[in-house]
Amino acid sequence: MKDLAIVLGIRPDVIRASKILKLLENQNEINFDFIWSGQHYSENMKDVFFNQLNVPKPDFEFNVDKSNDSTIVSSTIQNLFSHFETYKYKAVVFLGDTNTVMGSIAAAQHNIPVVHIEGCMRSYDWRMPEEKYRTVIDHLSDRIYAYLDDYKKQGLKEGISEDIIKVTGNPIVDIINENKQFFESGASYLDNEVINLSKDKFALVTCHRRENILNEESFKEITSLLNSIDDINVIFPIGYKTQEILKNSNIVLNNNIKLIDPIGYLEFMYLLKKADYVATDSGTVVEEACILNVPSIQMRYSTERPEVYDVKASVKFDPTADDNNYGQVIDKVNILKRGWKNPFGDGNSSQVIVNDLIELSKSDNFRKHKPLDYSFDTSRSFKE
Image (tube, rainbow, N blue to C red; front, side, top):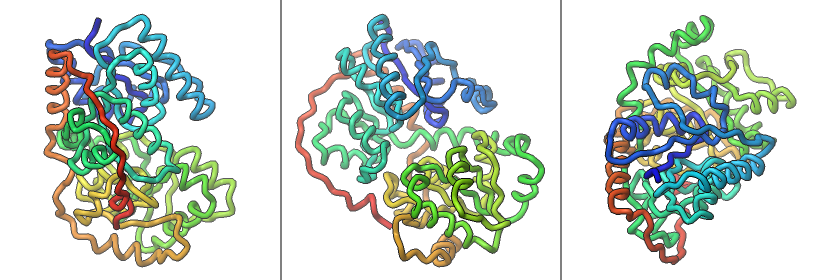
């Protein structure tokens, strides 16, 4: 029996977990298998960023049916269930809120303790599949690593036992702090036109959330906001699904908006670090921008990361509203004063998590009692 299985499925989660994987590989107190669910193609891991970090490659890689969310989830559960019949673990570790974390059901079916990194984050927006997934895994988990005290409080209000929640800080701080020197090399992967645009003032944009791009009115609101950025250039690495929706709409973007195909981590971080501000619906990008002291517009009805508003690193743009003042939003982000304190941790989160995993493994104490006492406070999710 091995001590742990670490199950990941998308490249952003591998980036966030990269130091955890390295620390686990470089110690000899517990052993583990790294399992790749297949939610993203494994070729996505062959980015130079992973080579530079020397992240260990998976011990097991699965294929999943990517037809839709249900087939990804069902084949992930099936693959992991079969794997756990052959390979025994003291606990199985998942990270985040993607389709892959629903594989925790397979661990629960085998009565294997579940560990969740990034637990108790809540947007209280039930339209988001991520909100459903993180709620499910948190209530299946026997150990939860919550990044912040406020996240822990949210879990406690749902009846999750205080005994199983440990506050760790956010591992993305560790990754950014230790790898800033690599970000400049991202320029070598960008074409000359984008490099030239990045030498002047520019805004960076990402938009992928289905509640934004699949809702016609929300998508129109977002593109109207982007078209209101008329004083600087805009660089928009646009996902293929968003490209398809834009192409099939009657929406025309202004000439100062440069659309490019999706780019790798290093290229993106190079642009993010240089941007005047970023407009995004990505929770991770909002965190990264906040840590790098780059102002942001959070294009979300609700958020699981209200800390960016607390430190005045971000302004809210609600795509579901029908009375948006686009110019006012741009004005607000332009007057944000850089220099805020990073609210996500001290850069030691990965070590805290690994140390706790080692202690839990030694004591065989992954499983803990979880009383149920539900009460909810949704106010912080909609904070501005």
